[in-house]
Length: 382
Image (cartoon, rainbow, N blue to C red; front, side, top):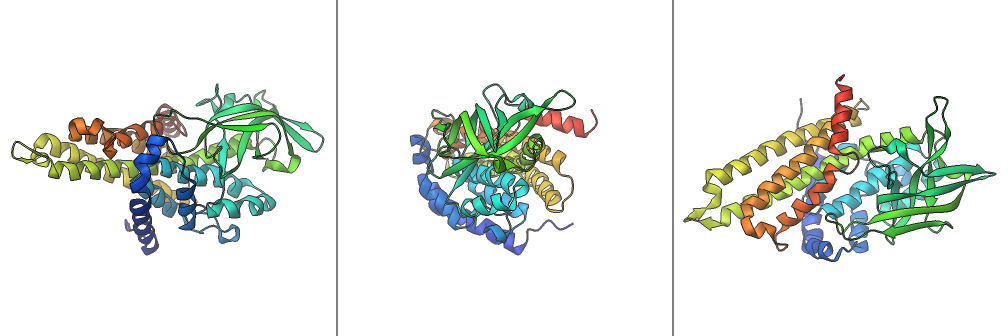
């Protein structure tokens, strides 16, 4: 087995890490404190090719494999969860459904701008009463001549209300299947469509510099050809999108773990207590050793899942495992990092405080830890 990244992937890691350190790190704390989405940073991330990394050149993408994209997300998350969220959601949830399920016309219309970072697209699945129970969506779409009329609402939608947001992919009930269950279809709804409103959500504990929105649809009319794929295929599309998205959430957990670990290690080496660096005390050294061990395990698990996807082999079980393990790992590593910092770890002047807060969303977004365990248990035959 070859565990080495390709030369191109190593270059991606090096360049994205350099960008994150020089462009994101100096402003991350301020953006977090002000709850400010940065249009400037997002466009810069687009300029270095962080959007549309797995999209073919035909649509202005980078034409790279999925592992290359995951490495990039990992390196951004190593510095800041908010900017990593913008990249992860922009690619896996925004670009992904259009690229994998859209018509040639839809791809040509939206993907070039989305792949350049000049525009963002949201993924409208979660509703106020339908989170983990994605099949409980109440938003509806009814045919009326050559149009669909959409009514309902969505919540906690990333990249959907900032000035770069171009629109959203929305799952809606379009009928009843033969087995009596709801039929779901997905639609592309552009900003500026009458009756469609996106409202920014604030006072978040985590990812405070990312854009999170509530979406409202009041008799929103879209052309018939705004349906994504075919009628009734929406639920499958959403599940497939979440499978790929779980890998990017795992990458955020892995990158965040790496960042918190490195911060704690550096602090432990320079913090002097009882006449020596605290890294020399077994209680601290073991926390760092455990963190290093688990990060290595997580990286191998995630990269294997990405390899499976790139080989067009089943990867859904491994994606759920990677998402679950990497998400919860960041909680353990960030907790160790705060403990090693002591009282300083509770202050906003130290980055470990932000790592600690940003982690919690990873246990919840794109399928809670509980849902991941359900998914995994089904794959192993429980």
